[in-house]
Length: 202
Image (cartoon, rainbow, N blue to C red; front, side, top):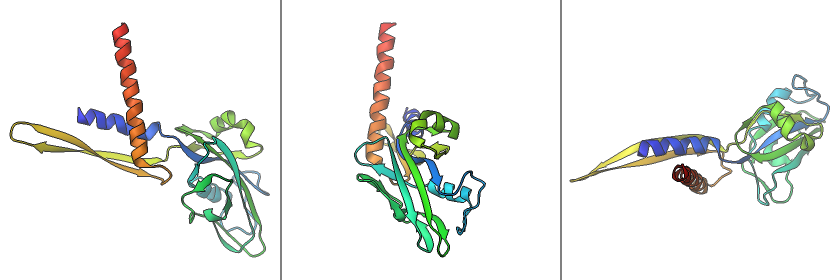
């Protein structure tokens, strides 16, 4: 039973948790992912991959918002250089984005959205077309849970034994693990109640 519950909870944690990710990007002077950016060490694909690892949270519950990087300082561009709208937090502020040469201005618009699961770039384009406004749609994984594993711990007593499951959860830092697990347990309970009610009806 504990094994079954552990596997079920793991699947829910890896598929049903919502998170914020960058779904679209527009770099000034860049028209496709194979372009080179003048004066920037990285190519477009590297910059895009770095941007996709940004970890956002919106405190006012907005599902979509835009933000911008606009800097000409020589050297490393970090997540801390991103202009954040009121109520928006970024957790990995030291995350590296790119490296600028002397006299180069880097301006990049980002569209960030909240959802769950994986979407291909074409699915992002279809779902968020009105929000992208010329930005390149990205393939995204919204889930802030990066890895879940568990092990069964068995206790032997004189007249009975007891099993417990120990969960090991790795996140991107943007969620409270206890709240996430509690929410998933509530959702599972609702689903089990629905199944029970259907069985009663039939």
